[in-house]
Image (cartoon, rainbow, N blue to C red; front, top):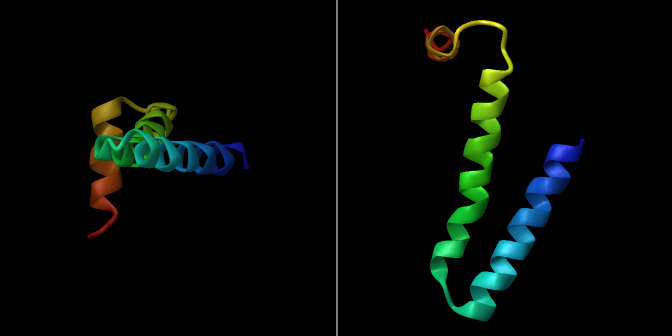
Length: 61
């Protein structure tokens, strides 16, 4: 429950700051934060990192 709230705050703050400072690179901050959270969640799995990544991508098959 806390992760969506944090992502919403990051998104709101980055959009406001991007519009105020006129720096479009700040629009990439929410996407980067989602990527970081995904990597942290993958690291929390008790298997080696690369095996976990391979398992996730083999689920498509």
